[in-house]
Image (tube, rainbow, N blue to C red; front, side, top):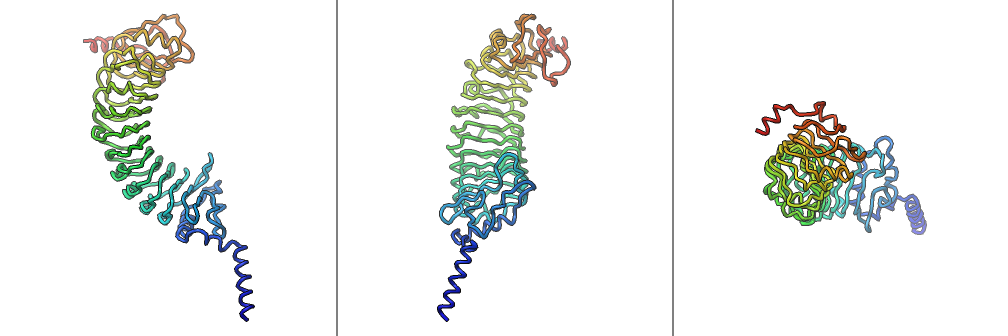
Amino acid sequence: MYTVSLSIFCASLILLLQCGLLSHALLDPNDFLALQSIRKSLNDLPGSNYFVSWDFTADPCTFSGVFCDADRVIALNLGDPRAGSPGLTGRIDPAIGKLSALAELTIVPGRVVGSLPRTLSQLKSLKFLAVSRNFISGDIPAGLGQLRRLQTLDLSFNQLTGAIPRPVGALPALANVVLGNNHLSGPIPPFVSHELARLDLKHNNLSGSLQQLGFPPSLHYISLSSNRLSGSLDRVFSNLNQLNYLDLSSNLFTGSIPVELFSFPISNLQLQRNQLFGPVEPADQVTIATVDLSFNRLSGQISPLFSTVENLYMNNNRFTGRVPSSIVDRLLAASIQILYLQHNYLSGIEINPTVEIPLSSSLCLQYNCMVLPVDTPCPLKAGPDKSRPTSQCIEWKG
């Protein structure tokens, strides 16, 4: 009897192993149950086959997007990352907080809705969190400020609202913060990480001044465009000697442009569509590839130190005087690709009417206080008028 029972048990065990029904026992039970809950709350959009491999009679560590170390899930990349994949739909299940060894969590672009689970704060090993280009709503959980190892936070292109929690700004290991294209509001919190290289908060409803933030000197990239930020830029960026990209466009900044901005090793300086005023006087030759100062209230003469800029936008301001000959020479040598000076009060430019502007260069001078010496195509938004009314020019000079 005992021999028969043992034989039956062994046969059953072999059958279970052959069917793979015990293979998931290799994975931590909490992780196994968490993956089951996550699977139930998410689905493939039509045309996506990401979850085909998620057969729980097999080893979950072989599932698409699941990466394990021993018996724990350490990385979870939900959805097919290949270009053109329609992504996933559904919600992020709170059970994700049970994956306590998780170091990386990504969800590819799709139609995932709902809020970010508060249980994310339980993932103390998390270093990389990227849930972008979905339809995540609600606020950013303040509990994310408990993730002391977090290095990358990318929640861009969602529908998040509310303020950026101050505990998130206090995370010590942050290197990349990408929260652009949401509906976030309130002031920008201080970011204290000395590892922070990228800060991208563009296209939100953020407000307030930058004066008291004290950006860490490690920053290479800052994009704060299309918000409602205001106040002066004086001394805000003075310690950022590693900065190579700065976009503050489409805000409400006032005051003059700090001279030091033109001496930073940046490739792109975007200050357009603010309320900046006063003269623009760089201390030395400007070596920035693209400088956009358009649609402000800047005045005075255009400095010849801008002649080394490849793409220069100074249109829709209050600049006066003549265009420096050094800038004209660089334009004719095809060293300047874009020179937009329309909608100012400029009185002249030294250029031969018979000269041919290089095909690789664009020049727009219309609606200034001069008779145009050359007829060059301008952007449609520049309007049809070639010159500013004489009465405006006399009033501005007076």
